[in-house]
Image (cartoon, rainbow, N blue to C red; front, side, top):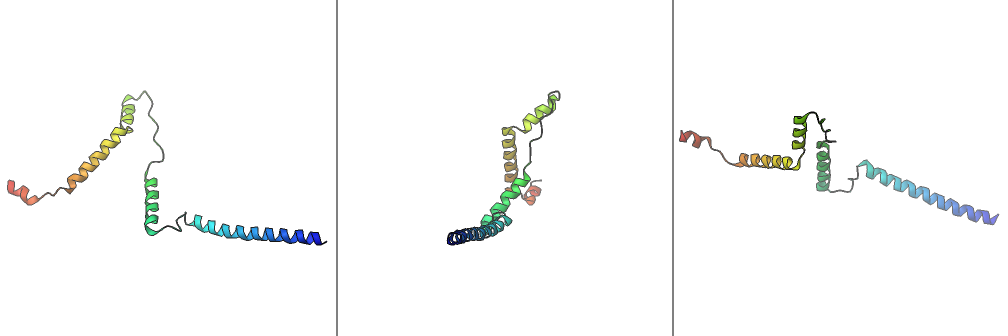
Length: 114
């Protein structure tokens, strides 16, 4: 009888500790995942995380399929617009456009020239 009592108390304590530990860890993990892993981040880190999430949503989910080979013009335009140099050229044009917006333009000087 004594041996069963010793075995019972060890099993009881072991299972009790495991259940308590499991509940504690479960609550911590639930709180962490509820906040999408941002519970311990600073304000700046949370802003950066939100910005990355917004940028990820703004990107297309998939590349459109290539048109059939019978449509030569569409295939050419598809290859052109999906090429790396086209994206770089487009980015350069955006930067150039932004630069031209920075340049001061005085309307009075333009009228004085006429």
